[in-house]
Image 1 (cartoon, one colour):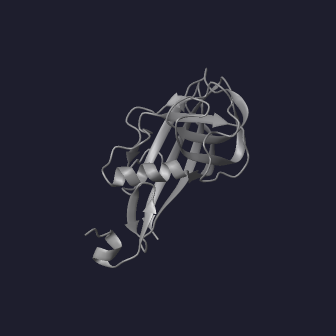
Image 2 (tube, helix red, strand yellow; image 1 turned 60 degrees about the vertical axis):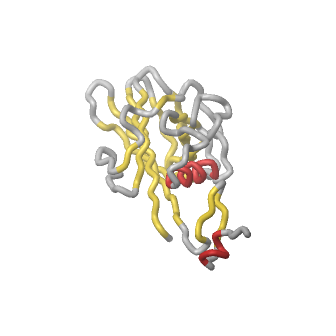
Image 3 (cartoon, rainbow, N blue to C red; image 1 turned 45 degrees about the horizontal axis):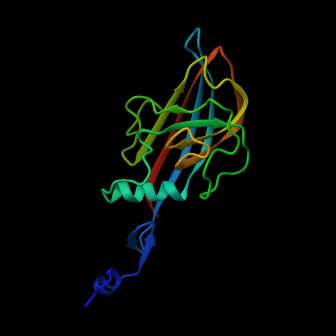
Length: 189
């Protein structure tokens, strides 16, 4: 005789990706991002641009697999970010950056992703922070308006964790370094 989880414990169950969770329990993953333009000569912050991101369906499965101590289908910890000029609102079904600026793919900064990151204002144990750094020779473009966390530099990549839309498009020149932080916060709803 076979029993499913609902029969055994008599609570509603729903499937999320390849795992089952109690149907009355919800975990919401919210995201935000920060782009920091830094003057390469002085080291001073020139501009900070905020944005919001949406975790993709692939990203939700990734977090579910990590939470269940399973090997994730997609490896975002050794992935990176891309920058682009797309302006449409991010959705869970996004699979790549909307408009890649080209040659912007960079792997994660050493030690990232991590939780409790005090460097970027994301310091909380229920948040994970991703960080990428572009120097003066990289990702110089105007109208940068989006960023994505991806598994690899492919077009499209094997997997997309999230897509972020900045509140205001900005320009990065060869006189500037750029750091982008993307935070994901998990909370019960």
